[in-house]
Image 1 (cartoon, rainbow, N blue to C red):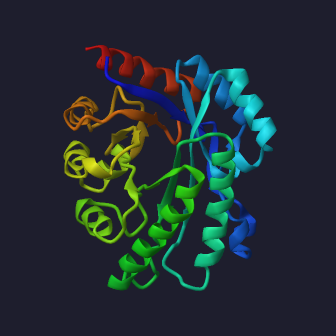
Image 2: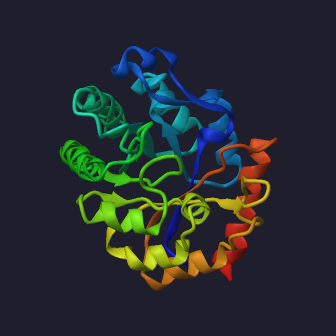
Image 3: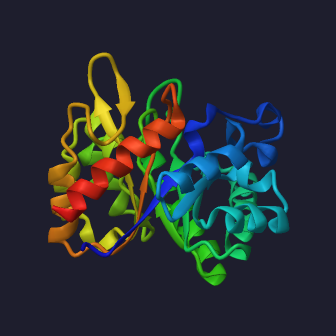
Length: 273
């Protein structure tokens, strides 16, 4: 049996968005799923996952005691929290890092091993080369704030940011020491080969996001379907000796519990095989 621990992201149990107050108060902006996290955790546990990842906004909606009880009631571990920022604008970077610190403090208080951040804003008039250097420096600061808390910090390349495809992934990881959390669907959608990227950057990878991807019409899917086979990705993970938490996610699905079960069923077959 492959030594992977399986988690699921709670982002599928409602619409995805951010706090509107962040338009005028950057420190108060957070990612969130506008849904019931109690139901999400119950469904994730029922599907057989051992851990959960939460957006920073959803995590901070609960006190530490409330979240600890929710996790214990469902037999789940908090594996990671996900936060984000523009990370390229000097004036607001302290505000963004304050937000990340707030989420990191709570995640560490609850014993999570990982902190994930996404971002790197695309300017209205185009990306400038110094933006990558600013992003790299900001990510190093995220790593620095996470380490004393016992958290391993990761950067998650994402569609709509300045780091999408393989060339941009290579560029940014030459500019920062933070770990790489590959999201297999986002990488594939940006023209990358997720399995090859895992091989190329294996030394920087200690946490992985798995999801399926359908090109036309564009959609993210459970792992048992889509246009990017998951089997070669799992084989690459085996080949590089990856061990640790793997978080499956699915940004939207008509029945979130069903989506979680479909991916778990696939993983049970694929890992056993």
